[in-house]
Image 1 (spheres, helix red, strand yellow):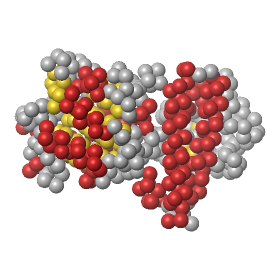
Image 2 (image 1 turned 90 degrees about the vertical axis):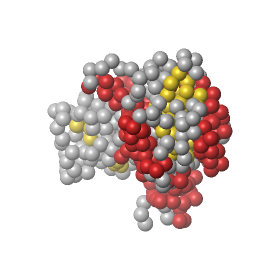
Image 3 (image 1 turned 120 degrees about the vertical axis):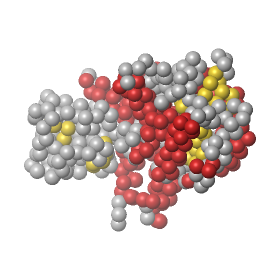
Image 4 (image 1 turned 135 degrees about the vertical axis):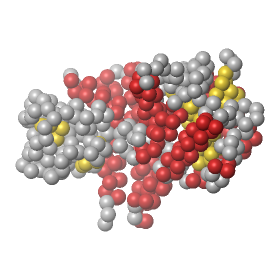
Length: 438
């Protein structure tokens, strides 16, 4: 890295060997831009205080002795980027010896654009309600597989902080686990479960509906295979219509599910399908990988200890792709995601396709109130709750700005981005102050 170039910086405590991906560190301001490159892949310490790494995560550069950031730029932190192309909130080292934040010209503009794309975290819903439906199996091997997927997903969601009573599981043989199963996968039980979720959920909550197992199509209409009459796409639309005040994520991990995006797409809805069309009618592997995405937070790519719907989708999509390649088989499923409500789903959601914004914000787990209560003293809970909500709003504004970039002048975009980043830093800094043990 040449002297004078801005770069994302991470200081590593003395004595730490390899850095665990996802470890969070405080990032001090570095007042001197002069740096000396070292060979790629080697670790170096400077004055026994720490090391820093470049944006690519594969070069270490020496840095002057760090000092505490000035008070008007508090609380900036960074997710370890070693071997990663994704970053959490970080700090751009100023080119000159004063902390004029986020200068943008030339190569720095590209770096900042990448930084913006990877910055915003999930918008945490107030709370999560989930409905897992395993289809009628037809064969013993599928019965065991659907039980395995459904019960594992139920367990993973509860381990992520969703109360057990808020994760409803419909399965054809309740004797497999009476304490886990809400009812059988019939139309009447599906309606009863949806009514319960509707009655229990509040405005802004996340309602997650996951369909596992068999699906079919007659060329025009999708059907999710139930015990008794099947649920059509129209039935599923009627089911989701009761959640107009909530944010909905429906995952159809079945064959022939691709056409559901046209039927179910709408405002505040994330629709994920295992296939790209009704014609992909072979049994799918997507469901198993979607479950795996939440187990031990396997899909948590930004290491914030939550798994967004976008992270779960991208993880599962990649696993499906690898699954067919490893077996040297022609892929018969191509997952899609729609969350902008236009019914035109994307394989790889991005600002260019318009999909991914809502999915990146929604993350199953406990609401802000639970998080605050677990980390704050009684006297700080009210202020912390207000700050957490303020932080959510700023993160949402940053993510929305990212999706508007193509319609804005670059100067206007950078000005708005700088304002939001500084506001986020101030809010995050105050949260960290209040969360420190007394």
